[in-house]
Length: 345
Image (cartoon, rainbow, N blue to C red):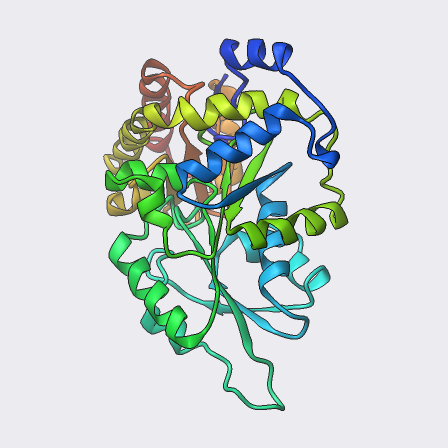
């Protein structure tokens, strides 16, 4: 099967498997796992931060950040289709006691102008804004990239307003690759940044949260409260080190493959796709005439291609290192053939 459902489906590389088998380990709850400690130190260095913490999932990393930046009863400003809103099980409310203040971005991109209009007024009888949360790249907008100058304006405005800013950077290395700048520069104004090792970077498990030493010290207690205290986690961190240091170098290949798939969709008359939004490794398109996305993905599966129906009429492809250029070319041909047939309604 050519699996284009997500970049989370990748298998560990042979180098990762060897590193995991040979990893030096200890009890990470006691801070004694040398491989976890090394991963945290190197992640902090890559992002130009004081400290980092290894967490099992990106969702946990985001929710730790929300908890440490906010107080119960506050609002968190986030994009209207953001991961922290739609895909993290309402934990913003359940765990941190906060409600989301949704702001629609332009192709998922939040500007300071839009954010500032969503602030809660400073009145004793109304909840206040506690945190701004951004997402780069933006998953459900199709992997779109927020440019550096847009984020710099947000950082400046938030600082003047006295508000912390967190980045859900699950695929921030994809954003950095697309913009041609390093992740430290791209994220320098955020108070905390979460990034995934297990998405485009290919690790089997794990994400990182980076920030100041004081923030990460608090994050350790919050991670434990969420059940994220792991023991001999160096087995996982060993793969994460390879993801962090080696896998970003090849992300441009995934972006090129996504573009190939997107063009195969754009060349048909049966689907709607905005090629300007295909900036990284995600391709999202809509079937015309209320075409049945579930039926379309079922037809793809029958031809050996796995994809996701993310709405009644909307389909998503995600490229990654387990799908080669040749496989993507084959998938593009199958997609073109199916879209040339009568739309499934």
